Length: 327
Image (cartoon, rainbow, N blue to C red):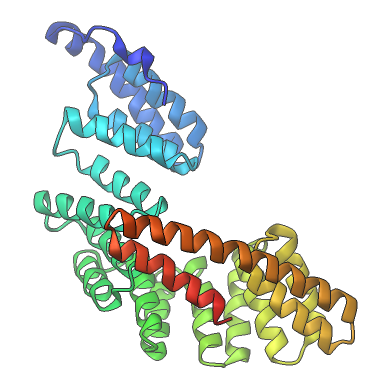
């Protein structure tokens, strides 16, 4: 991250007071643009705020948040660290840093970051939810459920926490409880894509493909171009023997994301059932090549984690490899 422009001398206390309203004005406008999803513009505004006042911690945190929304997670962490250097109790920076660490697969570090937040603010619902997500990614689903429940006690209408609790219950094969969590989220907001999509997946895991289809069609009504949603719908159609409809759906999914090996496998099966043998063989080959690459990458990454003595992250990688091999 180029921070050469921050190397100017810090303003004096009197000058800092004079500059603050203008810097805060840029910061407030950046927050407003971010809420509208205009993250490039938000990033520019936070940068302007920091050009005027390089020690405005909340602007560093905001800049980090905008970078994260643009997929620049390492830079997000650097900005959050700068905010925390200025203000060690900047809760926003800790929460944003935890999010970025999770996106980079650094789940143990994410948990530590959440714990730091909770040591400062034990009733921070976002930190409890974020910690739960990291624990779940490490396979610690009972602990994830406890964290999500804590978040929900603090914020009853916390959609993400309801969905994350449901996800953890599903991993423990407690599917009815899982679906109940998604229904609670949908009672709060009926068009919540994540709850609709995961509800469809839960029904697939129970082999209730008609119910899955209903939930997934609801999800795709909200977001018709979601690759995983289209794949899951194609899977449900294939399981119901509706292979022509499944092929259409799976082709649409793969037109958006060619890297979904599972979608290639289901497409291969449905094409075979329809007698489209050449396309079936092609789809199978695509799945094989993706799986081979993912297995190699997962083993290398897992071994690197073990070498660094990050055993839980290493086990997470190896478990993903085993999941591919069991397909």
